[in-house]
Length: 465
Image (cartoon, rainbow, N blue to C red; front, side):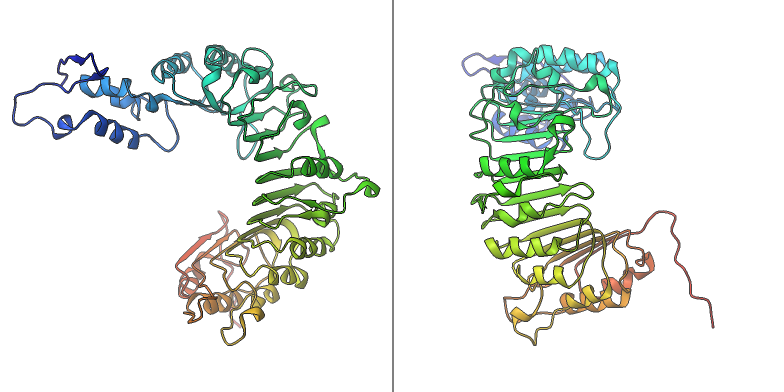
């Protein structure tokens, strides 16, 4: 029930409604600051314009709540647009104006949601027109923007210029690679970025970092599925890593294998790099990158791509031996096979706690090699600190061998603190793993066992003899 109340002119804060009734709601007795803190905790994980979710729902309860919510600018400083699948309406455009008004002078985070983490969307011309309207109303607030995510480059060349975003910290530019009308050609140096920019992501754009005037303060770089002139080669990747040797995290997608071995630097040291993910196309050998890269403080490493030769593990072993990083997470996807050479690499990273293998051929010999034997010195065990293991679409191993390995790591309670117990395993779409194996796997002593079986698959029964 709405209750009239006066505003405290001196503080600019709404005053709680006066009600002499003894059954006044306890929440209406809370101090203004505490009520606002509670409001912040009601925000959904993904910001929303929905009327039945915070912050809008807070304005529909009573005048006291409405005034409190409307005056709390942190509730309105994030604009997260619906995806092209959901579509934009005129109402959303008006809500953006409302968010900009109520956020006052707060730093802004804006996500245009024009890229998917999975498959590219088909974006209609109507959706682009509505996006253009939002860009225009956002332009006067450019100096407040700290995060600008998943936006087409064409909008940054017209109304919403990067040079006007003097507080910009995080920029994510994407484009439509399968639609000629969506392609934006950007000449080198077209984007003048502020010194505040720390994170840059480019996805499916037709240009690379040469489009930016300076990236002297950049710390996190993500270049994914660049198209046309923007495609990364071995040479451009090596030059980039050498020019930005201070990076703390880097994601590269290498589409071309050309490089000049004669001008290859003997070593590229990146002392601050803690996360590195590299993906490559068919017949591209990223070995030259691993051969010269020195990352002594690397914690997380990801590799994805088909192996041009079996020398891929040799490059990885040399890479690990050179920098001796204390890796904690390793992700390998689509490399095709695991063998003794990969085991040799794993022996070099006893600090590893998380191992993820996806779309790889994993045989029983590999699984058996991961058994933990506390009777042996720690140096004789592979991955003594492994806590989480993920196998996705990995075949060729016997279930009984997996059970034996898990039992050696799950039920084992080491007295030596140098060993750790396996606490979780995720098995997704592995051909021989069925739902009927769940109990057997859970009895291995691993705390969390996650099994995902391909939909529509049934377990084959062995016919009686």
